Image 1 (cartoon, rainbow, N blue to C red):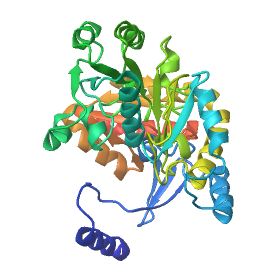
Image 2 (image 1 turned 60 degrees about the horizontal axis):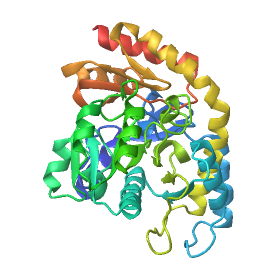
Image 3 (image 1 turned 30 degrees about the vertical axis):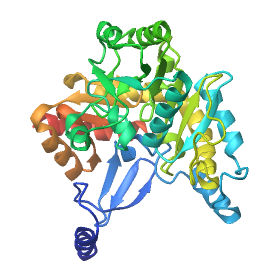
Length: 379
């Protein structure tokens, strides 16, 4: 207890209070976490869809350690170990045949890159995004993020962006004015509480972009890397983006993001860059992560269905291992009860509980977590 209290005092004195937190997590393994006081939790958040292969997966740990003994960093002025092989694999799983990848350090950076590339490719300046969207907190990604509470304090923002109702194709059509470079969309809105796109919505966006000469950017930062039972959520539809962004689950917690652009779309010399992006450790972690997810992928639909069946009384929205359900004003209360009883869940926007557990979570852990969540909701 003394260690945790001292740590809280240190944090309060020296770290900007941008986060609300009460617990110090010190160890993780698989889908389990332990705090500084020794309490054990089933983790149904996974660092917000980041720890895709669970905490400290041995294959990923070994890859990072082996690479750390060889080379931790070298500039992108040189060929980076594993970078080209990883790019090949990421393009392959994206299905964007003939496409190319560019690596970043986060999802927000990946979306910044997508914004830049769309402007370069089209010569246009504006974007269209959707209500309740979230694309990051850097200035460009924030400009296409809808939530007023986090966007408005930083206005004016660039690029100029028109927001239309998520799912409304007629409103999207009306938003085009001849200077729209791209439309950016989440196939499932994660921060809003796991809101899947209506049937035919992505296909409709694709058709609108084709009619108006704009690029379709699909943000799969949260939904990608096997989370929905396919490598990417757009692969559940017939639509294919011009630019795909990803991050979170790509490297099991090592900071990394990426964008993949279709054939013919690419940054040329001097048009984009990054000191740390796609470094040796990140690429090693990502390659190992993908190898683990390849084995896990067939199991994701059944695990997601097990969650949905167990929580059926609360009408969950579920695609693979993304599960959301609305509890309204009780959200914080439910989250706290679950934590006190050994299960970590997340309050997303608008009174929604979001579950995005590690892909390695077992049936026994799902059943235990569901039991606690049902207790919390039934009180």
